[in-house]
Image 1 (spheres, helix red, strand yellow):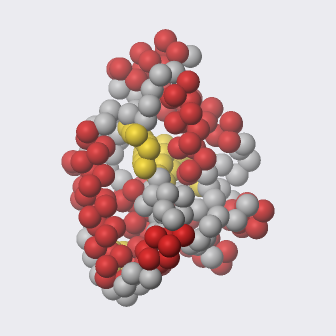
Image 2: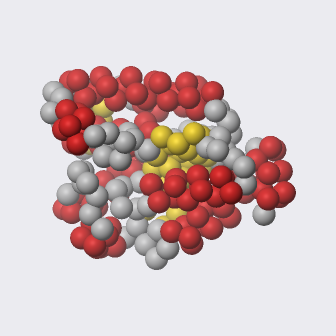
Length: 216
């Protein structure tokens, strides 16, 4: 499966990607997994490297993210089993808000978005790509922030509503056909994976559909 999972911090993006990856390994499927689009990639870099990313000038951050997105367009075409957390739609939300506000950005209505519309990469993505939009009630997200804080948390509690709204906008603007959303407010990690597996069935290509039938 080629899967892009998007959503505000604490909606379960990493949880779902890790769950799909583990599910695949149990069935002999090794998904290429990239869940490092949120600066400073707190899960794969050393503390020194993370601080180096945080200290980059806004214009350098924008360029780095732009190149990273272009590179992963190649990867999603290279691998038939790949999981991407956030990817270009996350950049549409977080870039002008947190990485380079007022720099390399433009106004669309009352929103600030990157100068480059990253949705322009969608015609280059495989047709069988599945997009999953995770969301949760704002108070649930704030509760998760308090009970299970992430290293280098990006979204302040007061921004949650606005970030949720922007992710919804980017999801709706996505031109890919295989997409669906999941409300994770009341879901455990196991229930989230189960819901993904159920809702993804209509969007599977023939090979993935056969694999699902044979390994259920």
